[in-house]
Length: 155
Image 1 (cartoon, rainbow, N blue to C red):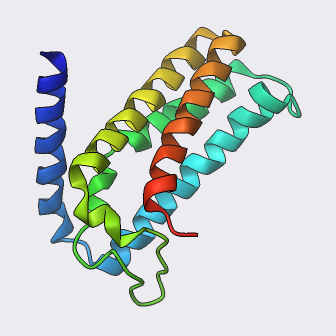
Image 2 (image 1 turned 90 degrees about the vertical axis):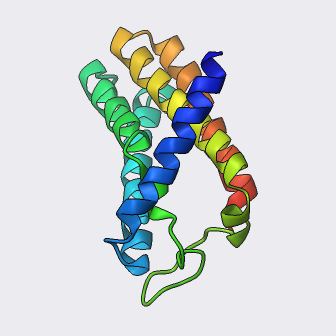
């Protein structure tokens, strides 16, 4: 029953996000979504350096802040930035999104739901300070990113 409710709510939020699209040009939608993904990537790099690679001394506050930032962006409604006309390059904004994404919204909703759950879990684990749990959650988040990239990101 929870999956049905979650699926319904996800669909409503995804559909409602298109009302915001009318206020943002396709060029800006691409620019904003690229910025969001870049900022998440930078924060994932901070976690990776401290918890996975150990190339930087572990600092729980920094890891938790990075994980919370990723979760906040994941929960921000970025689906609104995949409006009509953003399936191709616009102006000086180049996109790597596969146009097939726009024909497969049920699959995209599932993938994005998995991503949000993984990002939320990473934030929860980062709050505990347990590096083994953080490593596991980080791996799950990476897999959720990869699942979408493998299907809907052009090389």
